[in-house]
Length: 399
Ligand SMILES: [Zn+2]
Image (cartoon, rainbow, N blue to C red):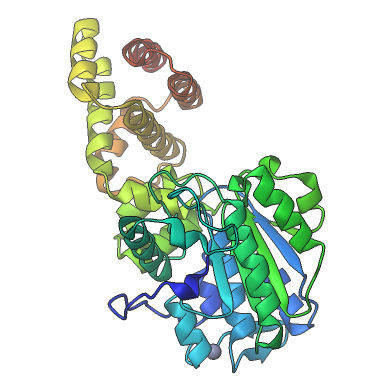
């Protein structure tokens, strides 16, 4: 479906970053490749941006679309920036650009209708509203993962729509950029139709597919695209982005980044939860396991009160927080310095812990936590896994 068919009002002002490629966090290698292609006028007919979820594949594709359509791009050496001010850049900032199409999974909608009509015509008013809302969020935050109830597939009607707009776009100014987000969600029929589109390149059209499950895409499609692999973001890049974009203090940003496994979207999800509380709870469980002589009853009790009805994902998160906390303690024990500590608010507690347990095998302890995380991911019983872990940790630290 075409983004330009969905109006997004001015109620969603978007912070314009002065340097537009900076709106994409990290990914300097991919940015360089794309800018060089723009500067040397060697833009590929099709790209595949692949890598883990939430690391900026759509954001990169949207930025590429902005630069290649900007009326006054700023070209300096091998860099090409959009001006951010021309009509094209403004249309882009609201995701209302006539040259830019964003395709994603849509709900099936009602049956019937012609195969040639827009996929939107089959949807209910309510579904259209949801799509508008989701696009408004995407316009503000290119890292947003568009989520529409019961939309799991990109169907052939959407790809037919792409074909039509490409044919119509030959006389248009600028470059038509079609972005197929999470392209692995194409049905077999849609993928076959898309393959035909790939086989008929047009000089002023670029097709970009993004995917976090490249292995699900047919080789015939992949082999016709220039593939650009995006790496997970490192903790510093994520921390910096969270401070600048989400106005977090450094402590919360570092802690959140340490859990997000290189994904900005995941970091944002984590912000909705009380991460510090989860950390304090699990650290209390560990400390009670190490403190008491009659620890078993105490440990079972504290696990019960902390884990309670928490779901598996939260337990996993708690264990990752415990791992980061112990890593901090081990760094202090080894270096006598708190400079690189992530849990900044816990420095005095960490220093005391490091002092008491300085000769213990922290590496071994962290390995046990990693094992427990794996077990929980593989559906092991949560309480039993936790008790086993705490007994092991007790052995390591009280040895
Ligand atoms: Zn511009």
